[in-house]
Image (cartoon, rainbow, N blue to C red):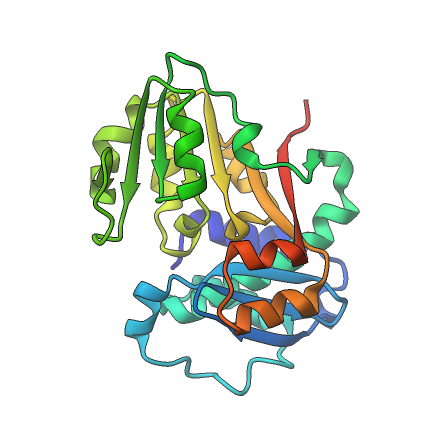
Length: 262
């Protein structure tokens, strides 16, 4: 869904990927958990499928015609109000972002092969807000922070400290640390969440969906991005198309943590 951050990402990629007009998307996979695209230069991008919301869209109108499309065309789908199209667009943004992150690596501070949660500064007196039910993070945060609030859109999650995402206006401004799942980029909530997070000391975007050039996020106060980079693009897409999630995808990508260069 459209937002100012997505629009800035598109503009930035168009300015920074020198051969963008020549790049094509040669494969698109929409899986149960993730959607993946592969470019003809070998780079791949991943985006959460948001299946609980996507399946209400019934079908992808351009199915059968996506592979072979210019990358410049598919990134524009990130601006679509049709969630199924937006997912493909963000996956394409993430694939193209790998070109920039490799060519302009000196602009950022990278750590590879680490879990992002272990790089986030959390103190015993901190209040942490986790936007999105990221199960592997929860036990680690509870052992390090004074308070943890989890905001989740899926009403099927009923657990201690889990609140509906509509509580963000009240909860997020109270946080010392805010951790936002990358899916907020797809559903259009990331712009507001970052604005609400401006009082936090540490603001993190995390997950395969957040694997993009971080400049528009850093500009709005994000301090750390935890994404991924494909190490075997074909294997990545195979796992996606067979319904795999993060546990299976880990064999085909490496985790990357990005901070602004100091």
